[in-house]
Amino acid sequence: MERAKIYHADPEILGGTPVFTGTRVPIDTLLVYLRKGKGIEDFRDDFPTVSREQAEALLELAEQDNKRAENRAWFDLSLQSALRESEDKSGPEYSEANLKQRYA
Image (cartoon, rainbow, N blue to C red; front, side, top):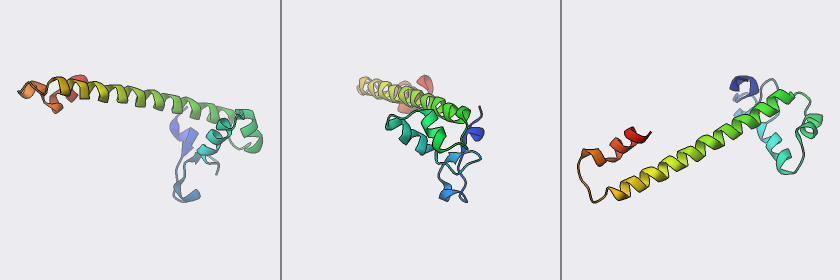
């Protein structure tokens, strides 16, 4: 499902807070329900304007974003390590820009 069909942010709706598309339900509300041990159906009982597909798709997007963040953190850590190892070496092949280009 496309991101725009799952949620959007409009300054005219709740001051730009991201909400499920077609509703005024903030996406954070689903996350609060889950943190409190409630399920998607509990959430949907209270917010029937949000489809099950939207709720599940939002959770999938969150999982993908977490994986991207983890990969980015690993890359940054690897880059820092490579830079530390190359501190004693000079030359353009060991520059930060070159390493980012090589390993990005």
